[in-house]
Every structure is written in C-alpha cells, then in structure tokens.
Length: 426
Image (cartoon, rainbow, N blue to C red; front, side, top):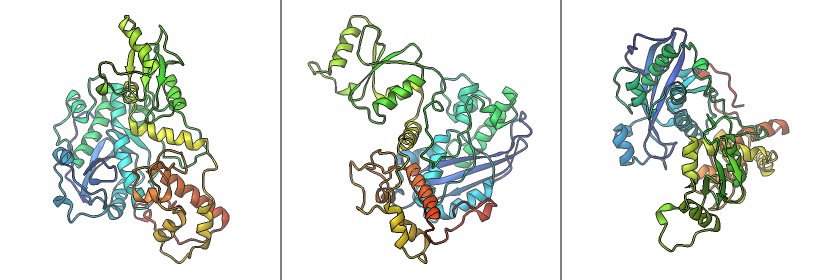
C-alpha cells in the first residue's frame, strides 16, 4: 500500500494520542462492495503516515450504482486492475497493526470491513473501534454531524469529502480538535459518554440489551402503545428498547397515550374512507378531539431514538441468540468428522458448515437468531445464517466444538503474521 504525503494538522493537537483512522467507499448499497479504503496513522497527536488503495468488489457485489459513483467518483473501470479483498486485507492490517481504529460513523466502516472479511472467509480483526460521529454528538450541539459539517464548525482544513484517504485524515484531525477543545487526552476520555464499541462477541450465551444503543432518555414522558407487526423488532424487543429510552408502554390507546407505533401503518397509502385498525381508529378520534397523540412507523420510532437499523438489527440478533444457547446444529459436528482433513481449508470449511437441506429459501429462519435468511449472500444462505454476525458466530462456535470433539481439519491460512498479531484462527 502506498503511503501518502505527510499531512499538516491544525496547530491545536493533543500529544499522546495514537491510533489509525480508516474510511471506506462502496460501489453500491452492499457493505461487501468496498471499492476504496483510506488510512491515516496518528502518533503522539500527529498524522505520521497515510495510505489509500482501490479495491475490486467481489462478484455479486460489484455493480457500481450511479448514486455511489456520484458521491465518490470511483467507477468499475477505475478498479478493473485493483486487488481483491483477500489481498487488500493483509495490507490494511500491516498498516494498522494493533492500533485502535477510528472512523466517522463506525457502524458503516466497521460493517464494510467485517462483511468483506466474512465473504472471503477471513476472521474479523479484534482492534477496538472509536466513533468520531458519536464523539461529536456527545461534545457538540449541531443540527447535523456529517464529517464536512463538523469540520466547518471546528474550522478544520478543507478536504476532499468522500475521498477515502482524505476522509480518514479528516477523522484524525477531528479527534485532535475535539481533544484540544475538551481537554481530553485519550480516545477513552473523548468517548466517556459514548464508550468504544467492543469486539464482536461470537458467544451466544451472553445476554445483550439495548442500553448501549440508547444515548439518552429521549422518550421520557411518552406513553406508547404498539399495534400491528413491526418489520425489524418483535413486540417484546420494541418494548425493551423504548423502555430503555424512558417511555412507558401500555396495551390500549387511552386519553393519556402520546405515541402509537403502528407496524403495518403506511401514511402514503391513506385514503378517505379507508378502514383502520381498532387502535388506529381510536387514536385518530382522540387526535381529532385535540389530544396530543402522534402515530409513528417503526422507522420513525428508531429515528427518534437515534438508533440506526444496522445497530438495532445487530443488537437484536445478539438478544435472540442469547436465548438459544444450544443453537449449534449437530450436523456441523457430524459432517466435519467424515471430511478429508487433507482438503484445502476453504473447501473443507464450506462442506462442514453447509446446511444438509440445501440453500435457504424465503421464510427460512437463521439457525442462530431466527431472523429471516431471505436475500442473504449465497454463502450465508448455504449455511442458513442471516448476516455476517451470525456467520462469524457459527464459525467461532463450530471451531470450539471441533477442538473439543477432536475433529481433524486442515490448518487455516493465517493473515496475522504480516502484522505481528497472535493467530487466533486455529
């Protein structure tokens, strides 16, 4: 990976801070469609090295949508000779080493790295992540917290927004500016109200809740009623989430109800004379009588709590898996026992984890968390898992059981030697 020119930071910086900032651009809406990565290494409050690399997205995730191209300017022609993720990842980690990772909107950049690793059968790195978006929300009061908006507010140097290396450098600058303004001298200090995201857990026995996602009791004073089927959350999960945000939940619409969350409600389809559910009709009458009562969709509720769909889906998968500690299917052990251990690692792993009933179809439930597998990547559909999180959990738990049962298997390829980390793939 080629290093960029040394970057000049604003005069105010925070000696002692050391980390690597990272930014990805994608070809389309798939988090596995990384087409560019930018990196900025910080030592003692100074950017000492930068790097960027174009990436060829994998087959099935390699369409370049006009909207994405308009944002970052990268086209399919630009990556025609670029490296695949399996070759890019070791270069990224050679640059990063054991550093803490920083990104502006960790939920996006972290998921790009992890989904890309999952599709290449590479275990996720365990470096801690910190989010400058969360830091900005915690330390500043702005109408928008986009990287360019926060940069202008803090009077940082101009940068080429949505160019991966430039965005990584700007995220590094942002950390220093927030540190100088707040007097904090560490990433942990800057994130004291928004703790660093811990490494993903593949241990389904640990109960997860929504407390880490809810930054404030934003729904305090609200009396909420749910109706209909929600798209992402089960009713009990939605109740847990809004209770964490400070709301009271009630079964029926009354004169004290302030919010009705309707899972099947689509305001764009309302027509005069249309029949509404009993709860919706009752809420409409109370509202017409002057009661302060809002009707929200699930998406509007999540937006009000300021929780992204990716974040809530990940937390929900962990909650569901925690209630199903014995989820690892027996065929994962039995199939592994009869396989030839002299096979190449990826072929052996695919055969061991493949579901015996063939690929999942619409309506199939994830073997780990019971979420729908529909529209999953073919490898996930083959294993009956709904996401990269559940795929990693499947691999991790299977490896532990194979070791416990003494199952012979090929040695996993190691990507750790190039950056001096302990090899945890075995």
